[in-house]
Length: 142
Image (cartoon, rainbow, N blue to C red; front, side, top):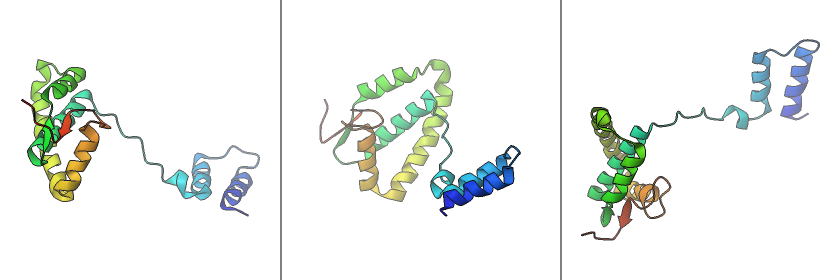
């Protein structure tokens, strides 16, 4: 009998004539296979302010650290406008930028410049997965 069949059989025997308890359902799911047990919890969505702070610090540090990479300030401004950052949020934004800059620099040191720069370009470059066109490789702006 398969693992799934065993779990179903055990659940049916325990719950015959009665409603299965939540613990038994969880046990049956765990016995059914590792895929169910390994589903990560859903991450809390980032606030627009957090998203902007991440984009700003990543792209600014990329321009400073990655050879030949330039940041398009207009694109970053568009992200700020999309995040609807207002003057009342400036103190919170400044704190998020400081915190995020520390984290980004730690990541840069941990994974190495080449890998980090490749990831930054993948997220914010011409075909960016997070925001397209904020970073441009090998181009000089005037």
